[in-house]
Length: 194
Image 1 (cartoon, rainbow, N blue to C red):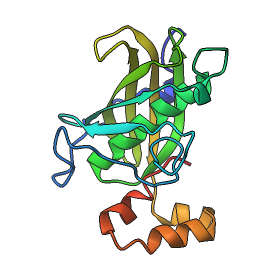
Image 2: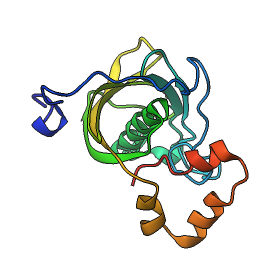
Image 3: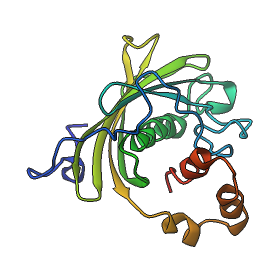
Image 4: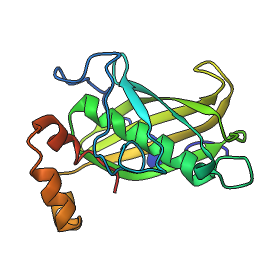
């Protein structure tokens, strides 16, 4: 890959991101936004079970262990699963801005294979904001937070209203999420990628 596409490059009038005053504190585990999310939910037996933590500024760190259920080529993580891990980590950034946003574009580069059994360490940050557009970047490393880069991504998220999910999701799941008595968990259920 020769670089990020123009759609992922913040325009000149984009502004630096600002962490919301009510965002989780640095080091705080963000937890699953929805129990049945393939990326972070505990209700998905073959999901990634990705765990993200708030970082400093508008950053998050996350990790997940590549299991045999995540392989593509024998013994190696499927590229789509790695892209999902990056997307899930990037999506977690929106919790620090306290907005509901969906993936508009995700550009992923694969630098090296990721073997089954590897713990993939991910870091993501928001780089700029312009109106409803949120520009962000992420990197995944093997062998530890300072290990070699295996995957990286640039993304554009678009802020949406909760109606985006209510109008397009399955009514049973929407109603279950809206009925959750835990206000934080109810709000987080709609912090998802389409």
